[in-house]
Amino acid sequence: MSDQSRHIVIVGGGHAGGSAAAVLRQLGWQERITIVGEEPLLPYQRPPLSKQWLSGEATEETLWLRPEKFYADATIDTRLGLRVTRIDRAAKTVTLSDEVMLTYDYLILATGARPRKLPLPGSDLHGVLELRTVADAEALKAALTQGARLAVIGGGYIGLEAAASAKSLGAEVTIIEREARVLARVACPLLSEFFETFHRDRGAVIEVNAQVAGLEGEGGRITGVRLGDGRVIPCDAALIGVGAVPNDELARDAGLSCDGGIVVSLEARTDDPAIFAIGDCTRRPLPLYDRMWRLESVPNALEQAKQAASAICGKPGPAPEVPWFWSDQYELRLQIAGIPFDATDIAVRGSVAEGKFALFHLGADGTVLAVEAVNASMEFMGGRRIIQRRKKLSRAQIEDMAVSMQQLAA
Amino acid sequence: MPRITYIEYNGTEHTVDVPVGKSVMQGAIENNIPGIDADCGGECACATCHVYVDEAWLGLVGLPTPGSQEASMLSFAAVTQPDSRLSCQINVTQAMDGLIVRMPEGQH
Ligand SMILES: Cc1cc2nc3c(=O)[nH]c(=O)nc-3n(C[C@H](O)[C@H](O)[C@H](O)COP(=O)(O)OP(=O)(O)OC[C@H]3O[C@@H](n4cnc5c(N)ncnc54)[C@H](O)[C@@H]3O)c2cc1C
Ligand code: FES
Image (cartoon, rainbow over all chains, first blue to last red):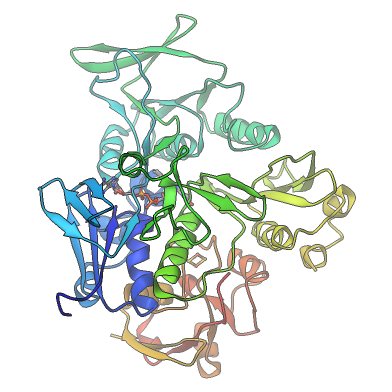
């Protein structure tokens, strides 16, 4: 490769950034690629951090998106443990935290998101944890000894997954949720209720409608979570899982349009034609739902990595996907397809009592908008197809188990 | 080490060594072979690691157990055939030296 060859710089070596580099090589990009990543690790998968990592079934190597050798073989330059601190769009350069300057022809921003901080007294106590990186997961794992008491602040997916893993490891768990139900932002009340019951049956304590007033400590270590009503939940560690905020500051400072995430097109392009943005840091179009949205999921990171790589290589982009997500808690596998924007009705297929069911969210005209499937992969896969085709179904059709998913999706 | 041949939909062949104990999906991902996406990383949750197992190998590799998670996921994967498998559910053994799998037109 000559010095004249073009250069793609990828900012952020997470799921999106690492995948973009791999897909660029698959699509035939033979010129230079550099990944600049703040974490000291090669691009890795985060989903196991709240699941197999805590139970000890995953290692750093099994988390890697690609083995170490791949980056050398594919001549992808990795600059790890370094941040990009500035983008100069006129000069097409980025500055790294070690003052090195790189020139780019295309820039891909894949900076992800970071855990939202709670402005609480006591946040700096030892034992106050969050969960985004391998380093975070290691700290959590170390805290989850037999009989340890873990307070989980925030009943979202990551909090519930960590709670399930912690219980399975023999820790005592209290989940503290500000809203009236867990998963309030991301699931319907029926599903929230199902998961609450399941976690309670496994021995977790769940406090809903609970404000956290502060974190209490002794000798610099956390000893409890003080609630708004004055009660204190004693604990040895507290995991704060109250959502994530997009890392879009770099883009904003460079004058790129941002709106709670870097605004991109279906090619993953920002309003600078040489700059793309992918993954958790973006606000992207959802063609099926005719709106802009920020998704935080692996499938989204991969889809946008393909969009950006295809656009750069002059290849047709991937067909728009139905957004989807999965979450594992105990022996439950939750798979969600679509997003129930403006849904007016819910059909229940299967048996909630037996823990094998799917909730179909319907629009006013009967269009299937989203499917939340618990231990029901067939419904999830069929649902994805139905949503893609914007098919309309009645509640009666969906709930009739005598009608197969094949027939429903046909 | 077993050698596995992956054939892309466009006919491009990739023959690589895959250690015993890894999955056929991991063999493709670690060698960055196009045509297997593996969105879920091998959790049998996405069906984007779909392959067709070469006829001669079907006996050894086998088909998914009816009613299994893999069978459910495959029932709606893109363009399935009777020889379809999810490659993350095939664990490589020494006996699979020479295995041939083909990729479907698309994974989504
Ligand atoms: C515990 C946990 C469990 C999850 N489980 C699931 C699941 O089951 N299913 C699912 O679909 N999704 C899951 N997710 C979400 C999924 O992991 C994310 O959507 C995905 O990682 C997004 O990829 P990304 O590359 O956009 O961001 P990230 O993976 O966060 O990567 C961004 C990287 O950029 C780096 N960076 C940021 N700024 C800079 C800079 N200026 N310079 C250099 N580097 C920078 C960051 O340090 C980070 O390494 C989970 C997430 C977590 C944390
Ligand atoms: S990798 Fe997702 S099902 Fe095989």
